[in-house]
Length: 202
Image (cartoon, rainbow, N blue to C red; front, side, top):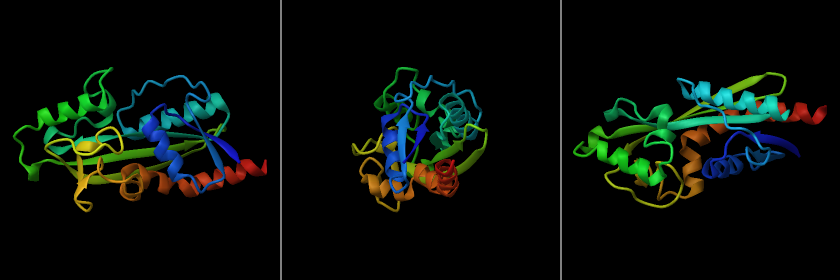
């Protein structure tokens, strides 16, 4: 088994990452497992932040590392919260606080104009500086009230029309088949497999 680092302390993201790479011969270590210092997410895009996290983790730990950045883009809010999704309601806000703020800002906006999408970028970096990138997008609608306790983040208010429910109501397996993060991770798997095989052969 090859140890790789997921540069995150977010328990929800870590759980999804581990589920999605469960078939690979890897042990996924978290930022806490390797005492990885936090990285300032100063990038203007999800890609910049994901690459920064992955490169930093690979440099510090000497292991293949995954960096991920993702967020919610609401059309009626001009694409916000975007890269500020985790900080949208302030540095100490909870998921409930962020969901409440989104719903408050969309008060009175009709269903057909509540379109939104989840966007994710996953980057894989090696200690010698190689970087691979994959993107994922999932289109949905912002519900009028939270529904469900599955997932995390904005999932209780992200209504996915093909499921007829929010991600908060969807099972983890259902969500992973269509989610932005699932798409981005599946897209990066071929590169990750190559890098893992290369590491095993050393």
